[in-house]
Image 1 (cartoon, rainbow, N blue to C red):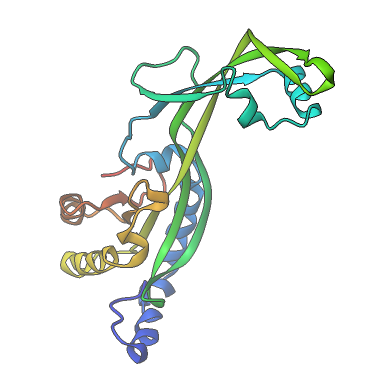
Image 2 (tube, one colour):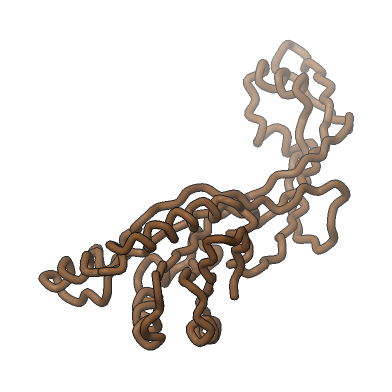
Length: 254
């Protein structure tokens, strides 16, 4: 992992100067970590729980037969059907819907040694970046269907339409957003202060400063052999800490 890179000439020197990268244990931790982050349950534990936004949407539409008739008459749906009952509305709801789907949460990709940039310059590298997709808004869409009765006008000049409700449908839609977790791997923590300086620097960079898709802010998580003091300080500063235990399947924040 690179340290602070403040200038163009100093930048490349520091970006590849991390001696920890050359340690065999670093690769072992990276492979151990890569296998586990692909489990969506792993990613979910590092991110805050957001309430699922529910939106009830109601749309009034002609059925397919009526729609075909409108088109055959050369009539534009928006302009003509508004004289019937063509409208849409939506409102936010708090209650669960019966049989509603669970909020989506899916692993999308991982990236080793992901560049961290500032003003289009690479100034550091995150050991591993994991990206997930999560459901944010659930839309319960009700569509009221209307059938139209077509009455030709005298003289063959067009037709008039009268509408009657013929049924309705209900379906769910779910909008999703992306979120990212950046992992900093250490074979050993020699100095808590040095680790905090590095993490605080990363937090200011473009990839960690903003929010993915306008949603959750990216998280920064340390993975290292257990270090009680480092874990406590990381937690106090808003960083995650996972203890590397090669003989254990456990993967959780300390």
